[in-house]
View 1: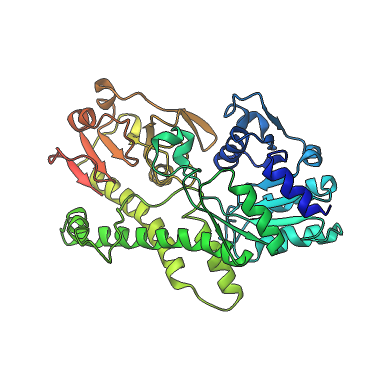
View 2: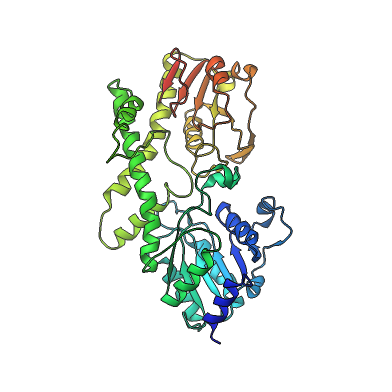
Length: 423
């Protein structure tokens, strides 16, 4: 019996051991789901202490040691792919992982990369490493790419409470060969209702880039319109509501304080970087990124100008920021517009405190800061309130009633006109 057939039977009978490397919100949800579906599971993360609190299932084996790779049949890599300071791809997490685990790899295993990256990553950083180990991909070792599509909301909600969970979101899968694709398809059908087969690794990698570029460009469009229409005294939200009544040919996007998270601010620049190497200028991607960064500066300048013009006396030179998660109803602060605004205010000599029902504490310039509980007394300490993240758990009636001056970046406060500013 060949290696493909052995692994195929193991996956079909749920006898294969699934190991997930990288236990952020993507990796942890994958690990939990495979375990729930009856697979033996191993979770590996070099920051084990931080991620352990996400798990209360004793059937899931957690470790920070790569040697346990040798016990796995399937290895899923859910590793960060950030940007360097010069906006170039940083694939050091994938490189380091492959370096650490390759001596524990064995014939008959399957590796699936789920990290977002530019087309060609799977072949360059995974396939080439396997070949150096003298594995024959598609014969005695198997390789697929399947871009993650997990909502950050799964960290703070059960999958029953959100529209698209891991189970009902279509999963793209591409294989190094048809044999690899068949195994990847079998594997992922255990955790999702629909697997979409891609003809190539590069097409699957690019599809993830396009998903996030689409959002980045459209968010930038409405943010740029917001800044311009504010200048000529036209309500951007009314305009977008009117445009949204068209039942075809229009997709609604809302303006905000910028963009955040691990996808939209980062992934488009992976493709932009690759295009530059190929002597092609993807202008939309660069411009969208610049606009979505510009809007945080625009908001900050509005606040600072108002404080100066009205000669507002800030207690301890502090404003109150509501929401430091990058989007509503989650606890993820990566690339958070709220924190970017806080840093810009700090440079101008204005400090801040924050309230966020999903984020208990943050590290700001090496200092730990804790979320404040919203109440009537709290608002008396901050003449300026900046609403950045529109969490459902916020008491907007209280905010609207008690906040002295409100700068609302989300158009969430509906019953306030005096001393209220949409930015």
